[in-house]
Image 1 (cartoon, rainbow, N blue to C red):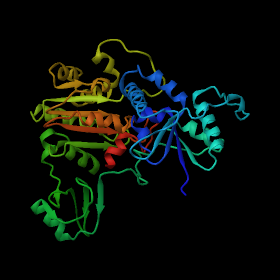
Image 2 (image 1 turned 90 degrees about the vertical axis):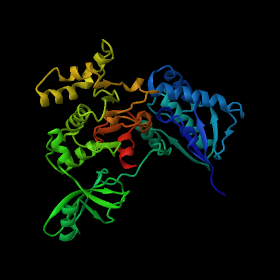
Image 3 (image 1 turned 30 degrees about the vertical axis):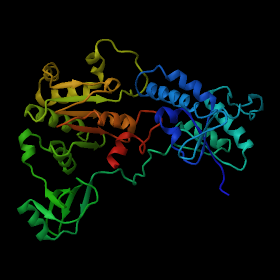
Image 4 (image 1 turned 180 degrees about the vertical axis):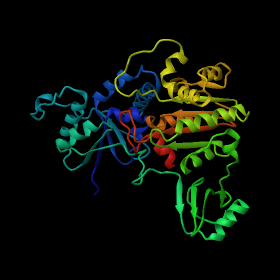
Length: 403
């Protein structure tokens, strides 16, 4: 007989994914009462945290129509959801220096008592709080991350390009003279290929729809007077300028040219009439301590976050007023992430900066805002994450790039 599987969910998981409680088929999902107290503190907050907290409150209220939550309510996927099955006895807590009145420690204590009440069950605390996982491990309680959005990244992150060195000299000649070469060589669409033979090489893109390699042409680069410095910048710029590629992900270290190439190629295409405007948004996650509320309207509040773009334009055009002129003329719009829901951007290039600090659910909301004849660019460095509860493998940028 299979062992009963019990999952204790932490508040961080629910705030990360509002549908997390329905993601454990065949398990008994236990929601400590202290989690509801913590959700109550978030329900009035703006943005995704408040939205997720309110959604979970409504979801639990709807479950009350199916049965009593303290006895367990069964869902269609074979799992059950229980609230406050065991009331932790603070007096019986293990003797150590932990303050058992703190919310995370109450969850840990409930897990300890539940493991005693169900010694034969497979019990695990699911949390995105690293510190809570360490505490659980110290007390002999199994704890793990929330893996629904987790992806298996290779040792090196997905780069979107492949090095293939088994081409013949004739293949390379054909690629240069005809511009295309029929050959199966890649699994992912729009993979950039460094094709190499014994004596020559070429840069190409894998067109999955037509089943052929396509030589990368420099004519687009000359149109906007941008000269890429290496093959990675050449690949990125080609994707940014190709109207057939509606979603581009760019990852790279600081100083690799992500902002420079994205901004200048976007403005160039707007000035050429290919798009009507550039729409900028980002996850507002500061590095270090908060400095408090910023004064002014939306543009003034977003000014500190726009500094990389302003610096790029000043360096390129030698004109400190270039950014303000674009904004006043409607060619550049700032769309804070908090107010992006419900909007639709048509004939626009949507640029999402620092997208490694967004969850996949936040990026999904942004991507679905893109309308007809538009393009969206997600850029960031997956090794520089400032948002709690996400890491190199679970941030939105890494997941979108991989998928």
